[in-house]
Image (cartoon, rainbow, N blue to C red; front, side, top):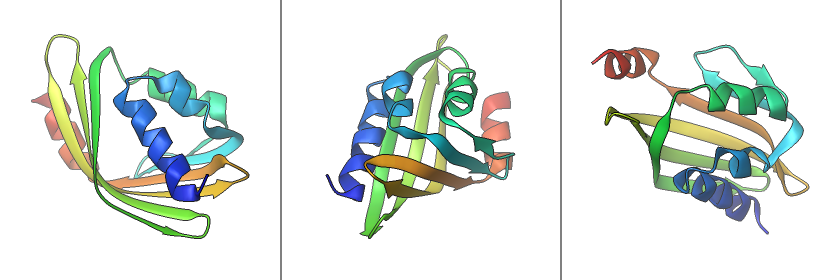
Length: 122
């Protein structure tokens, strides 16, 4: 599997609303950074943070562009979430993944925290 195929499978797991399946694709010592928030180290720490996002009814991550250069995959996405009760948010972002030995060893998403906070408050 190419690095891009691994990242695409990871994104597909999110769209299946299967956070565990997605997290299982992360290396045990993954470096995960939702910039501008604090970075997270380790698969289980990432899993705990991601599962703590709230009670999600649906996840729809739309990839608008994807590029691969060796073990680096860059994505431009709009990450959509629907929470139980119907609240929806959609966050435009840029994601960068590093893949080694079939696992995601580094995941960084760059997004506008203010936009996220406004949508969550609205």
